[in-house]
Every structure is written in structure tokens, then in C-alpha cells.
Image (cartoon, rainbow, N blue to C red):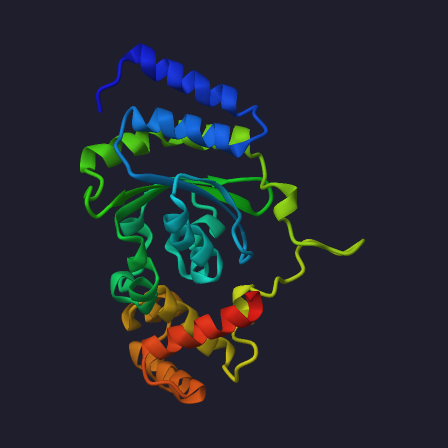
Length: 270
């Protein structure tokens, strides 16, 4: 997008000034104003991530109806299956496109059909910002289906801008707001496992440790071959695990598995 050098520098100066503001809205509006001077996009959202905790929303550009899908529903549990969440927890840094992070069967997964398709996005890209401790945040830029995906030149430009975006976000949020940290008793360590830690999601069910790993990868959108590579076991062994999981959970499909996941998450969060 065409923007004068003067306008670009003024917009960048506004972002730098906003890093000292107490409100995340001032920073969010300033940085999307700067980014929109270079690349067209429909929405922006900034989520903070701390392990498997419910992610705090730090900034959004959605209408109330859109926010229900992109924020409220997401925070209820689908974030646990989001490739952006996984990448943030793994402390990736810089600019990434969803297609670079998503498992091989992500776009055919029940998670995609049941939740992600409701967003009506053509593409989502993000700036990944590791923070102090195990905190991280992701500044996501989104284009709706009517707008089409980001072009190659747009993605290249955003990747070039990533060091500045990451640095500015770190200035604004050296760590996630303290109010979003889990409540702890005096002397209690912050590392105490959270109820939504991935290892505990399935603890009420009679699954083995390996079966829990397989369930997690299936729900994320990994194929049998991808799961086999990730766990360093044979595809045939993965299929045996899946049959055993379906039998134990009394389900017959991935749709049933996702429904059981939602059931468990609703019970723990609701």
C-alpha cells in the first residue's frame, strides 16, 4: 500500500509513544495504524499466552458479534487446539503464517469444521513475541474470505517488519498483566499445574499416557503419518491406539472425539 515516508515515520513514532501508555487499546490502535500503512487486513487481535491457561485478550478490532466467535468462544477451549497457541507456548518468534504452522490435516480436522470455519477467514498471520518467563503474546492479522489471503509480497513485507513489531510489543508488554496470572496461596509456586494443562485434560478417562498424546495430536489436526513421526512410532501402532481410544471413549469418529473434548472443557471452565 502506498504511504509517504513522512506518514510512515509519524505512524511509527505514534506506536513508540503508545508503548508508554497504560491502555493496551492506545498501543493496539497505533500499531495497526502503522501496519495498515503497508498491508491491507480486516482484523487484528492480540492474545497473551501462559501455558494452557485461558489466554487473556489484550486488544481486538471486532464487532460484538465477531468478538463472540473470535474471543469468547475461543477462550472457552478451542485455543488449546490452535496452531498459534502451540507455537506461542513453544516460544516461536517473528512472523508466521497459519499455513506454516498448521498440522497436515488441520483444514480437514473437526476443530476446523466445528470452530475455525465460523471465523470465515481466508488467512491468519501472526507476529509471535516471547516474553519474560514462559509468557508470550501473538499479534494476529486476519483477512476475511471476501478479501482473499495475504499475497506473497505482503507476507514478505510483514516478515521484514517483524523485528520492529516484536520489539515494540516487548516494550509495551514486558510480561503479561499480573491480573491474568493464576491465583496462588502464599508460598505456592506459579508452576503448579493448571486444571487445563494438556496432561490433565483427559485424566478423568481411562487412557494411557501414549493414548493421551495421540488424542491431543488427532484433535490438533495431525494425520496418522504425522502422529507417527511426532511420537516416533509406526503408523500401524497409531491406528491401534486410535481404535483403543475410540473403544474406551465409546465413540466412532473424530467428531465424537471433538464432542468429548468440548464436554470436558465445558465441565472444567463452565
